[in-house]
Amino acid sequence: MKKLLNFLIPLLFVSIPIWSQINYEQTPTKWMYGWTSFHPNLERYLNSEKTIPSIISADMTLSSDTVYMLSSNVYVTNDATLTIEPGTLIRCDHEHPASLVVTRGAKLIAEGNKNAPIIFTSSKAAKERSSGDWGGIVILGNGRINTASGVSAVEGNFIPKYSLYGGNNTTEESAILKYIRIEFPGHKINQSKELNGLTLCGIGSNTIIENVQISYSSDDSFEWFGGTGNFTNLISYKAKDDDFDIANGFIGSLTEIVSIRHPFISDTSGSYAIEIDGYNKEEGFSSEAALSTLRVKNAMIVNLADQESIHFIHPAISAKKLARLSMESSCISGFSNGIRLDNSFKKQSQVDRNIRFSNNVFNISEDGLKTKYPEAISNSKMFKKNKFTKYFKDAKDMYTNPTDEDQPSFALKKHQYKIVL
Image 1 (cartoon, rainbow, N blue to C red):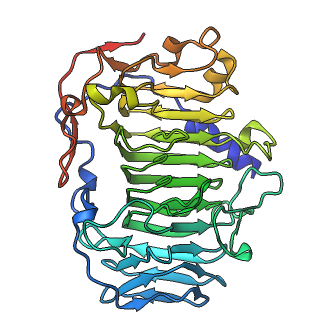
Image 2 (image 1 turned 180 degrees about the vertical axis):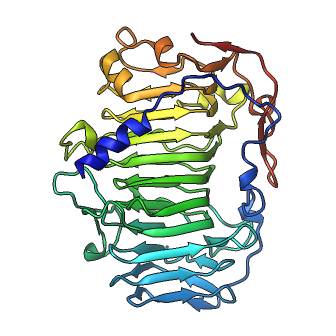
C-alpha cells in the first residue's frame, strides 16, 4: 500500500515544462454534446411504471423498456450487482425522497451511451422540478480512507449497517457509470445535513466514472470520501454547493471536467467549483502520503457572472487542511480569486510543496490567491507561467456561446493576456 501511494503522488505533481499556446477556435467540450441536457426542467419524461424494491440482495437488471420509480432509500446489498441498461429512465420520488445506496461489496453497472443515456430525475412534472427533490446516488467501497480506523460511515438517514465504507481493496471496481444524467438531487435531511448528487466513498482504482452530468444539486454535485481513481468527462451544472468536493484522503485525477455555476446560486456556508480537504479534522492523518491529493487537467471552470453580479462571486477553489492540488491546462473564469487557502497553509514552503498551477487561463476580479497570510505566501510565485485576462470579463465576452441551453460553447474568444512570470 505504501509503495502505491509513493508512486501516485509524484505522478500527480509532474511539472509541465513548456507553455502550450491556446487554440481559440477549439471547442474544448465537444464530448458533452448529444447526451446532456441543460434545460432538464423542461424535459417531458414518461411516468413511472414499476417501483424498484427497497432491498436488492441478488443480481438485478433494470430494462430500458420500463420506466422505474426510485422511492425512499434503496440498498444494493449482499455483494449483488445492479445493472441498468442504456436508455433507462428512473423517476425519483420527491414525496418520499429517494437515494440509491450501493453497499460495500455490491456493485452498480450503469453503462448508457451517447444516444441512450441513463437518466435519474425528479418525479415531478416538467416546469415543477427543483434542486433537492430527491436524495442521490451513493457508492460505498472497500478502498483506502485516511481516518484512524480506516472505516467510516456515510452521512445521511441510512440504515447503519449499510452505511459503512473503507478497507484495503485499493483496486476494487466499485461501480461502472457511463453516460448518465442525475437531475435535481441533494435532498435536505435537516438544517445541517444534505445529500449529494453522486457520493463516492472509499472506491477502488478500477471504478469507472465517465460522461456523467449532475444538474441542480441542492448540495455538492460530486463528492469523494477517500479512495482512489482517475475520472473523466464530468459535468456539474448550477449546483447550490460545491461542484467537485474531495475529502478523507482521496488520491486521483479529474480530466476534462466542466463546472457551470451561477453567481446567485450558492450555499450560505460558501460554495466552490472545487473544494479539497487534506484530512478529516476529527481523525487527523498518519503521513503526508495520506493527504487528499488531486490532479486536475483540461477543466472548464465557469461562473456565469457579469459586471452587475460581480459582488456575489467567490473564489473558484478552496484548499484546506494541507490538501495537495495540481491544476493544469484549464480555464477558470467568473470568480473573485483562483484559490482560497485556509489557515493550515502558513508558509511558502507548504504551498510550494502542495499546490501547483501551470498553463491555465484565469479571468478573475481580484488576486489569484486569497490567504490569511499574504505577507508569507507569494501570489505571483504560485501563478508563474499562467495567464490572466487584463480585466474581468463577462461570460458572454469570454466564451463564444456559454449560456445556450441546447449546446453551450466554451471556446475562448480572442483576448490579450498578460503572463505572470
